[in-house]
Amino acid sequence: MTAWATSPTQRELRQSISNNSNNSEQVMTMAKPQKAAETNPSPGAALATREQDAVALSVLDDMDIEVDGLEEASREDLKVAAKVFNMVGVDSNNDPIPKNAFFDTIEETVQKRIDAILLVLHKTHSYSEYNNAEKKTERFCASFDRVTGRVLRDFGGHKEGDLRNCKDCPDYAWRKDADGKNTRNCGDVYNVVGLERESQMPFVVRFKKTSLPVIKTHMQKHHLGRRVVAGKRANVPLFAFAVELSCVMADAGTHALPVIERGAVLSKDEMLVAAEAAKMLREQMFDVLDRTETQEASAEETGGAGDTSFDADGFVDPEGEATQPAA
Image (cartoon, rainbow, N blue to C red; front, side, top):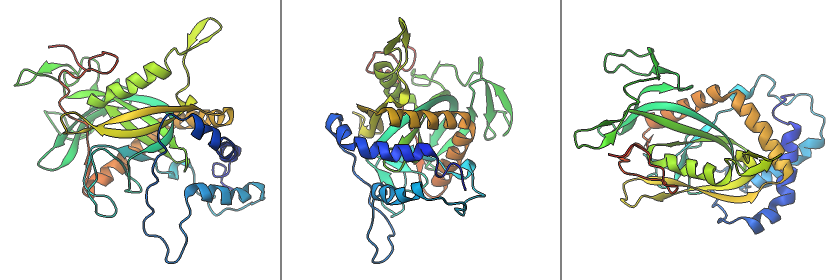
């Protein structure tokens, strides 16, 4: 039997969600997310929600199944979707994708809101630019550990596959562009892995450039040093709360910015399950992000591109921290 398919933690989570759904709805400070419409249903079949499926499938918990047909499958076969905002292209129904919505790179569907649990953060470096002529994001160099970068395509005398030292890298340094604005080629990316609460499927959402202050402010306000243990400051785990993710258009109307709304404190059972998921995903973070990059690149090849590479000159986050040095 496939160990990760019917682990005790998943059973506990389904029961916890069922037992605490009413309480969560009463204390949540955000609107209940809209469910995305199902596509390509079987003729004459009633469309059951994933929540209904979870309840119906709970009968499996008490069944002694020796063979489930997925013995050759493993965690590595589980694809992790990127939830991309500012996506340019069309969805699976050939409808234009709104910038202020999340595009799922696996299901190719659009979500205005995501009811989620954030699990783990991993910081990377990325040098990428949006090519308006080609209508896609071009990736030049990236670093998983922010120590060593790998060249992803030939540019500026660098060959694809070359390794570069991130320390003192000229592409990471701030400089003035032709208009006298602060700019740099490479920047920090906050990759956040989460779980959709209804489906329990993992996803990745990336915060970079103008969207970086969103995740920084969320962590500062709700997590970093927000509890005291034995007289010392400690963090509140990233997975301590339910959150709702959405997007709003920036004042200029040129691009969208993500919004994180904190909801209710999760139950102990949900936190324990989330902690186990966070540990597992943390151990496999490189593979998770690598597979997510592949999914995102595949989505771009079929007519879309997600990017937050907008002019961030003078942009200041709600806590007053500038995203770049002053002029």
